[in-house]
Image 1 (cartoon, each protein chain N blue to C red):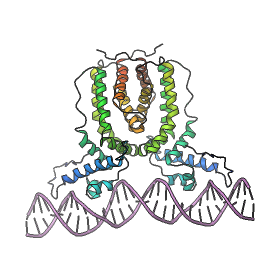
Image 2 (image 1 turned 180 degrees about the vertical axis):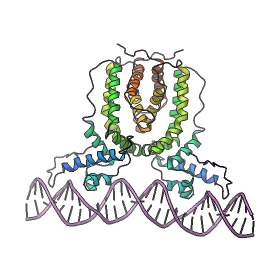
Image 3 (image 1 turned 120 degrees about the vertical axis):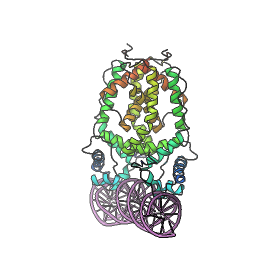
Image 4 (image 1 turned 90 degrees about the vertical axis):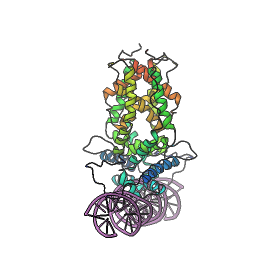
Length: 215
Length: 215
DNA sequence: CGCTTGTCGAGACTCGACGTCTCGTCAATA
DNA sequence: TATTGACGAGACGTCGAGTCTCGACAAGCG
């Protein structure tokens, strides 16, 4: 994440400066290769493995230059994703009903995850997260902001402190659904799915703590 | 999966037979090592990487003996998991309310995933699934039965063919929630979580297609 | 009994990736 | 101008996957 390390105690910073072009080249190469490895023909985008060596070669950069600024491949991918995601997801729209806001939020999320190179990078990130607890932590931190957005959206629509409704539970239902389908690919993550999921979550959120037994 | 390959056209089967002890030793070694690699002290159970070489060494078996019968490490782990899961999850209990049945089902699932060596093996499986589409397919197939159980449970309680309620959506919400928390580990998968998730899903299932706008 | 077939344990082998290390070079500061 | 530190390039050690070969062994068949 921290591609610009904390200069901490205001060091005089003698010596050669960091090459900004190299940084961009590395990030771009990571995006390009990850998307390409997903298969130029197959649109699946499962993000075939991309090695650090390949990124360095593609970026015309020494491998050490990567390891000097990023602790792991996950960190590089996360930075690369951040450089793309800035102009990916539109800001939260006007406030309508809970169901409408939810549907819009989820549809935006799903749509961003369908686009390249985001799709392939997310796959690679998921792979790293499953492998390395440290990468898992990084991914958690990186998605925390978006999670908080969803949580705030839910909180803004439910009755204040309605007991029996755990917002974190709903957030995990939403993002769990997303990552689950994203990983397994057994069902689509399209606008229809976003719409249905929004309806389901809205129903769960509004049914506060009333006993749910239909009989 | 097919540790007993299709004999197909009824071959006469000349030559030495498969060593059943070796098969068991491999499965046991896979379970033992995966659980051990998770950290004997730390109860996290994130399932540190276990190599095929290590399994072969632990099982006192040639590496080729593993590759002869299983196509990949995932297949070995899946078989090992299956040999454990048989006596892990109790059969579906008596039918009560939707909420009660759901809570019982989820609690059983979560509980099984907390036990060793299941926990570590699931982590390894998740890692493999994220890496290799083929492993992902294997995992999907292996969990299909349990998914179908949950789907049947839901179908048995909801009004027949209630429009607007997509059972697959609910199943993905449940299992997505499970895998999401299992991967990230940011929140517990305990009985309380199962109870809350059951309530949320039951609410979503019973609120059929009525417009969910509270306003 | 031998011959054939196919598995067994063991280990050497290639291949690819990770991460470290060392060059000689180059830019910026002091 | 000397020092400092990033730069490209690439060698290196390590590890795991998967393949291959080897001699030994166990079954069926003639």
